[in-house]
Length: 504
Image 1 (tube, rainbow, N blue to C red):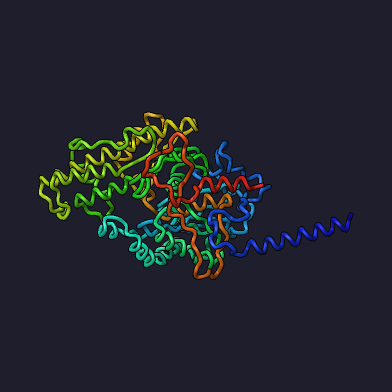
Image 2: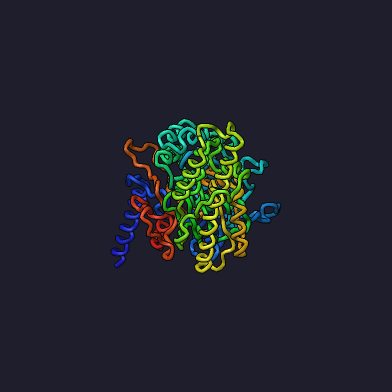
């Protein structure tokens, strides 16, 4: 009997050793890039009382304590420090490099926060200018692509990203007065976005991570837009409702917990940001700042009721968005007014400028009215699912628009909610939101180990150009023919939920 037990122990030890060896090998042509393969909360010991459960949607996440400055930061007598993590630096700081190249912005940021009593605590909020080491970012926007082509040309964008990515990452490190060896992890956007652009950022992130043996966090671009609001809003807790609006996306999601989202509505064709850009191009506006700011500025001079555009999808009682029809209406109105886009707005006659301003104002009113109607219905749906909701987060590039914010603020006030909008610098694509989202996921053990020092030439990067954030709400599923479903990666929420079920 003893001999049998001895052999069983020997076999178990050998199998565990082999398993550990194989787990360190890159045997998979396409890594998960979201979860560490053993996927355990490595940042704190399981036995530690300092770490409450964070994966249950039924209880508030411990990450909610992130946004409060803790008294321990200013207490001279405090010595309580969380247990060591093998990936943590000696000073118990999490220092994460975030890289963003999903579309036409090349951005990087270094963000640092500290562990005290098992909770991550901000040491500095965004752009304080007091402690650059704690929050530093660098970016290179590629506006000429929009000005030249009226949109983003993927191949040209890829080349532009490739030319500046090394410089942008190095600038972020230099501004933080750090080197890559000081980092705890690297976070990078892996989707959704343009695959050619995503590849540039992922390649750079893997190079940095492999060179310094750093774990990696693959970041969902739209989740980063939603979560960055938790960086600047102290009271923002799960669950909350989020409207994410940009050039490529219109998305209404119920954020129940970190990595747990319900999709209430999405774009079935064109997003609002794309409609802004096209309208600005047809009106002959300066696109170097993108179409949104140009339209908003010109609209202040016009009559928002001068042209009777119809509101999209009035007959559809769901939360989905469509801007293709409104774009067509705008184009026809521009043709009827004989607007010549070849003549820049700065050279237009006073009568021509007035016509353009009326079109811009009328377009903006109806475009945002579509947002208002969808948000109102989404609030009603969300409150049925999670009655404790108190906030609507509006983020993404279009959330920088002051008219958008003002109109949506009226909607949330009617429903006794609070509107949360990150500062404009964090609404547009940026490295801070990627670094911050990386910190949120890294803290609960969702990361991949460092890539190998040398990867084969035919290595396939894990890119997810079409990647839903959450599963569709049953009541809001669209039957629209234009809602494309081919080549869509499984949602972030479904991946995380499946991994949670596999845990002991």
